[in-house]
Image 1 (cartoon, rainbow over the protein chains, first blue to last red):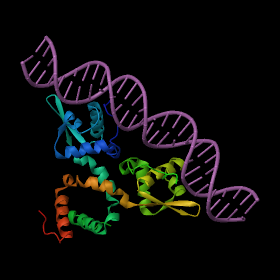
Image 2 (cartoon, protein in one colour):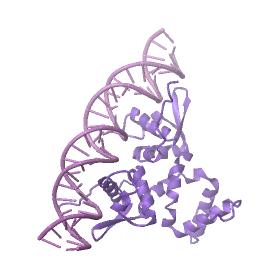
Image 3 (spheres, each protein chain N blue to C red):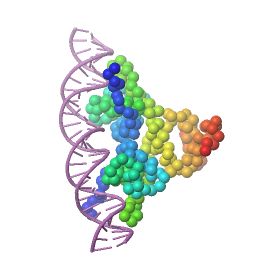
Image 4 (tube, chains in turn purple, green, red, orange):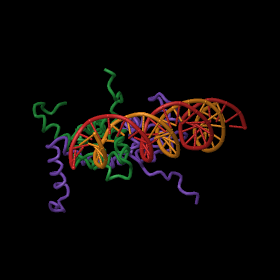
Length: 117
Length: 117
DNA sequence: TTGACGCGTAAGGAAATGCTTACGTATGGT
DNA sequence: ACCATACGTAAGCATTTCCTTACGCGTCAA
């Protein structure tokens, strides 16, 4: 066994730190796209786009699927949950209403646990 | 006037891409802290912590205030809004319920506009 | 089979990042 | 005045990031 190809741990925060990669995710929000298609939206070479996509892939933010000779990349929204989870700790600072609502939601959506301590 | 010290644009996504800086923000969520106090939570030198705080400061995520000979850093939650705004575009993918609820909220919290088209 | 297309990856280099130690400057206590 | 404390910053260095060009491999069309 030659060891798995990518031993990198999925650094989601690092992946979304680059503007181009965020824009790629934004584009993939509409529909899946091939590398060449994506490249048209950027001022960089196609290999550069490929490398960015690799970072997004390793982070679990996109998924690739072969279609003939092209590879279509598709958004994997669940990959963003680490960011969402981290941000959740700060939400109460932005809007008191939203904070209260979330607490309400948490109780309403998990009626099994009775107002956990 | 010798020009403002930091001409860097506030790269919030870059600022939160480093685990140590996220942890610093997490610590500052409890209360404001001095540099030395923060340093005790990390395995790096005090200057290194200072440099990380500088990045957070430039990004508008923290605010510093002199107290005698120490500088206390305080969280500025509003600095995270770029992240929140960007993430908002993806929220509908995670949970249909949450998405519907948000739409509901939007209508409920702006009763002036009657179910905008 | 031949050739164009779509793509990943290697190689190389410029620039940014993240740490260290050394030093300089205020502030506070004695 | 003296010295310790708290901190920022400069300098130096290793590593990482991000781009380029060059190349190689599979796929489609004729």
